Image 1 (tube, one colour):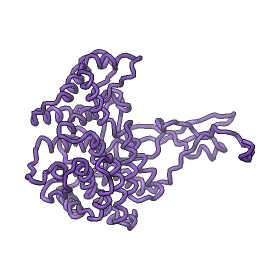
Image 2 (cartoon, helix red, strand yellow):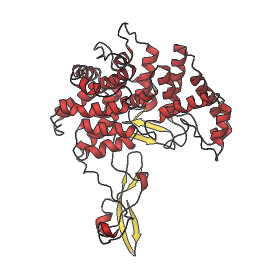
Image 3 (tube, helix red, strand yellow):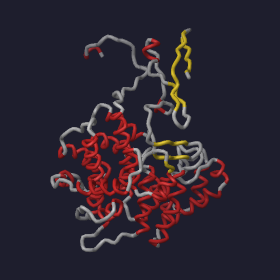
Image 4 (cartoon, one colour):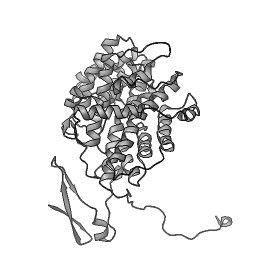
Length: 426
């Protein structure tokens, strides 16, 4: 199967690649050399496939999300986050024996060098947690200086385990630094997700008891965020890694990409919007009206999705968890009351229903994180915790396939050649 491009009286025949879900892509890798310089222009790479990947399938029109062929609905209902991490990274769901070994290997690598605390101490308490986590992740290289031998499965495995072990510790430290709590290393007797909760929330003078409703909700949230195809941060991890940069620094780059409000910062924007509505009196009908007014600059955050044109399949799953958490904790919070009001009106309002502007995963995740007492600035860190195995999987796939270094082209629109002028003549 081929496609043809005709330009300046000449025709170029290009192969068409077909994916396992019948996706078609025109392979333009030889177009520039065959045509003497012709390239395609695709701002933001919205229509450009940068790779062939076997990790995640996403169909925005049908509202489908699958990891390695498994539906997100089945995984969220039945699997643990660590099972899903193993699936994304290594391609198959683990047996109980493999999962137990994976978890034990992670526990064995969970200690973070004490000198990392000196780096953490260098940040003011007011530092944004994403900046702290990005810096600490990059600093792991100093304590693990040997490069990863990608031809060695053992070497690759050890690096992956180290990162999965230490990253939750760094995230918990960023939170405890922010809240003025002493640092905590967790408890090796706990599950992976339960240990994250303990490291974040245990008070120095109290025992910490795991709330199963909260643990279940966090497990689902992490699974739902674990990968999302070639998004901004995953593409960043791959393109940084394509230079043969190591795993830790490639992931650090992904963290920085996620930090942006158009990507991982969306759930933080939801809560900031809700707080703004509360400060203005809490009238949800007024703000739904503003959202429908094309002349009004107000944006309703957490509704609709740039990829999912029908509904966000993750939102359907996490909505129940949000209801369960709010019901179990019995929280009285006017901001969360406003969220419930907006949700109800959007699901019943013809304007939003016709346009399929349903609450998305960012809307519900922001509600859950607020209910758990997680500071708004930490929301994107929680996103990064979930996305970590997806980033690792993308990096590993890219390196094992020996993909070439990323090097996008451009259409130059600047000045033509002009002579240099001495400064006295300018």
